[in-house]
Image (cartoon, rainbow, N blue to C red; front, side, top):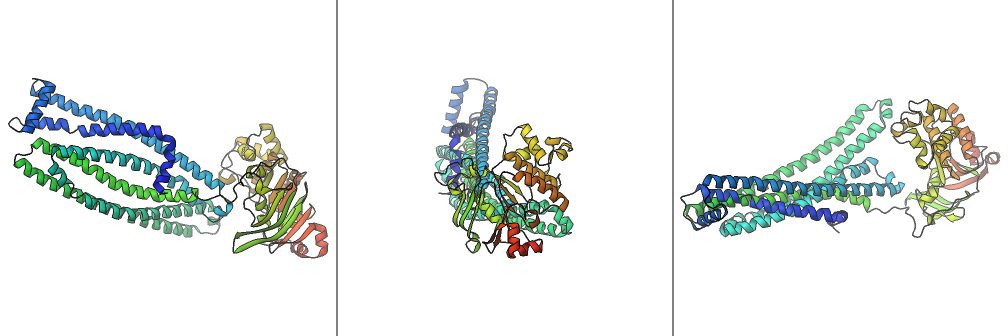
Length: 596
């Protein structure tokens, strides 16, 4: 299926507005075709009284039938008023048509953008890990605008141009067939010029979209990491990086604009040749007395109506090629299948006690990069298990499998004995609370950030969650309290404050399973001690899986699973593993290690 036919499917819900817009447009085209006739009647019927020609005589007879014996000045006035009336009606119909077409195009763009964003939200982390977020943002914000170009400059413009073209050609043949054929001599050359430049414009448009996406990616990355840039004095380097990408975009845009200008020159020259040839043939006919001057003026007007839509079709073809490049980038996203979609017949997970089992799990981010091998582990309801190990051991990966951010290559993950592959992701994640190493906050109020995992929470519940997380006091010291904005990614708050809001979010969700991924690694020892007191309160009565590199914080909390080379090397209470003097003892004595 071509990109155009796929695009037009987005307009199926807007059939009736499109039909109304089309009818208004057709009426406007018809009025436009009539606009030249009052001038012809003015020239042949009033301004050339000495002419004695059958065509002129017919024109005068028609004027007499319309206006009777009125003075010539009145006839001129009525003809001039008819020009104004025709243009006014044409303007109103054109306004209605354009409004409806533009409205439908914008509605379709809204639907496409929403579909793109929903698709990106549904795609697994594997997809987002391999792609820059700026590229995805560019496709949603800018590539999606291509659908409006295809509709408004494609369907609407092409239909209008074709109707005008056919109507003008039909009238031209009735005026003089010989002149009409002379005017069409250049059309084959115009066709081949359109074909030649269309392919180049699509390739160059694709290059522009990609280069502009690169510019956005570099700018977004540099600005979002501004603290690191300043800390390492890399401002000039970042500017050079940006200049490099922006220069590539400039070159791509320059190539595209050169092609556009050259193609316009070629088409314009061909049109000028056709016009000149028509005037040459027409002048001969006027001089020989076989064609009235008014008819030549009328014919030249319709020649403009013939060439203008042809030229419009040329530019439309090139605009469509550019828009097709953007739509192809949109469909690249929409065509991707979510790797962790709900299985057919998946059911909602009922309220769980919190038993978790990893049964013979194997997983790799790529076929060549295996992370986990035959991992089997059972966690009882209400039990706390900490995962420790070296860099790349697979600790955080196990938590990601529980949340179905990824699906295992082999084996099963079970919750209360039920394979999570056969339950809906929403119901599964609804029973898991999370606190991450760097709590992600949205650029909204404190209240909305706390209630993010439970939007229907009441005000007393939000306040209670904040108190349990020991966040209430500092929140109330903020200018608007719970209505205070936290800034982009929580930039108005300290690391410890962001972490407390993340913990409040988990308290409010009140899920039976709790996942903690390095919840204190970014904190200083004093803040860590305070946060751990809150976290221990949060863990009470919940099945808790925690990943940390600070072994002292989890040594006495419950059981410890030691991962090494993608396998569980040791499992049991921390003090017991320490006495064994194995891998855990080495990590404990080292005091610190890297996080996976």
